[in-house]
Length: 243
Image (cartoon, rainbow, N blue to C red):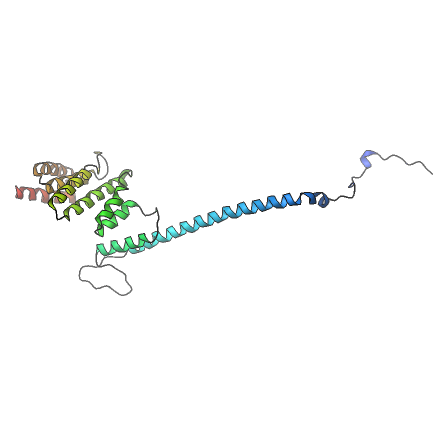
């Protein structure tokens, strides 16, 4: 018998030793692998559930804003005009504001600003609610803050004017005057001229005629050529007539 030759290493083909396949080696680790897959599935389920709820909440908020906008956009009928079929409208600004507030109250959302809530409450004659809402917005920057402080001034004035007790009315008007002075302290800021106009009005309501007249004269100069000029002229005439 011929003596067998020793094969060269490059000619040796790889084979599985012990008859183990890849699956045989994987089986002992299957429990760990399945457990890891289970954890991943749970994590992904939680993540996508949270995202779904967030998207659902966002959709509900969008629907709320759309509902409020739809109510607010309905027109107010001229006095004495009957409502028309299939054309929703309101008999007054107060009625529309009440409907808007009712729509807002259905859900809680930050997408309806406090200044807007205050404006609607003011138009509805709900002065305490308007004051509370405006106070939350007086610190807003720029024009938004100035409008909120102006709204607060008007709401405080309206509440004071509605008082039947003289002392309470006086106190309320003083508070409104203090608020007017904060509307726009910046000489170049938005609504500055209206801030001074409201301050002058309240001085007149508090019977501080000399101070009111001086401030109205300042506003008159600033308002030259605008619609506010006519209002100031009327206020000055009223002060002159009362003197």
